[in-house]
Length: 86
Image (cartoon, rainbow, N blue to C red):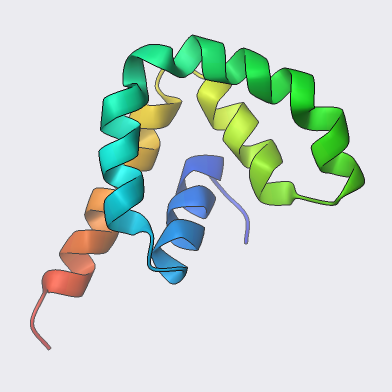
């Protein structure tokens, strides 16, 4: 899957049935985004060793000022698609 890392993260969360709790946690932790980005940067070498591409996407998204907003928007879009009849 190519494209925006925020959309990849949202799609993976939706696929696992975690879109609603993730949306809630993202809203609650939005002020901590810079600290979470630093933690992700520190853990990236370990995450690469276990081959976690999604965690690399997460670090990239958290390091971007609008990254969490883009994940939230992608989760909202996925929720709207699920809510549409038919």
